[in-house]
Image (tube, rainbow, N blue to C red; front, side, top):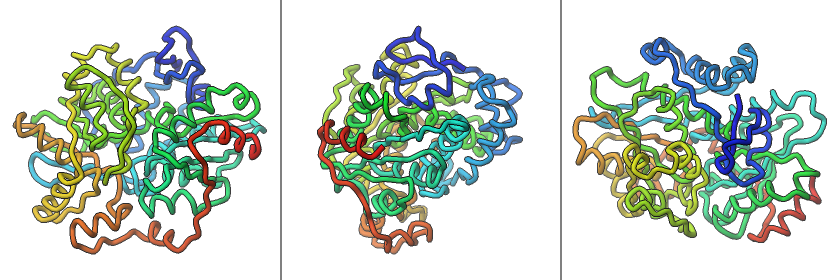
Length: 433
């Protein structure tokens, strides 16, 4: 397998180099040289494959010999250890629950796969690997859980002060060991900027082995394609076109869906669902991409004003706006609408959505109001208990907190306070690694 940068399609690196570097030197993003069409024998018989077998078949064709099949199978078996069940609310609306992993968020799939992959490639290397990750909510907790106590790897998580939920912050700041949390006095985009600047700083990269666990890293994206096939497998065979609706922040999840479609999954339409941070829906509507400072919302993990994976989306479609807007429809909703959707779905179906999933339901409803006869799958990206005060306030209903999250509430937080300037962050890295 070879990968190129979205800013230089003629300069190739290996899978191992792309995974460890995270970001190309030119500040582009790594993309596979080719995305294979999976065989019909696989696509037509998805119901006969387990979730792990689906992941193995995808990686076997995508990685084309980069990892021996026996090792690849072990990587997947050790990372995909929890389900992605599909819940039917009505004939047109299904919820794909992606929160059954250790941190109760969809990012557990990518983080655990990446941890296994990096550990495999890191065998025999005596120099410590330092992973930098910016989080707007769920990424940090998933990465912390995925890499916790992993030999030879230390993790630094940057999160925006006051802009993640209480329990999300607990997941970042209470583990200790090889996990360090940095509380940044700024937005998620500021956190992401610090991470990118670190990768492009020659002083740092010559002295410290840096890698990333954000969705800018191709190793995060690949396993997220697995559950699109897993969801499709669980749908009824009624001939209706299948639509996937993705609550979107940095757009890695949607990009993984586009990978799945390129590999042959028969997806009729993708829907990008956002909150007030609507730069991609605005682009899909106008053809103009105008990044801006993110604003805080109820669905905080989507508070991104300049999504990194937009570059990959453009690359997949050769920057052709007409083709992108044909495959992806975009919708944005206010916090007020989000709260209304959470109440309405709970009253109608007894189902508790988190704020991000509620934005997804709103977007699917908006699409299906003009496109009847489709089956819609909304990706429910986090367990509602991660947003406990808001969810209980909105629904006026007590929410059960899973034990692995509840035990964090009594643990002491430990984080490093920092501003948005790069030089102090650089100095901190040099002093600590």
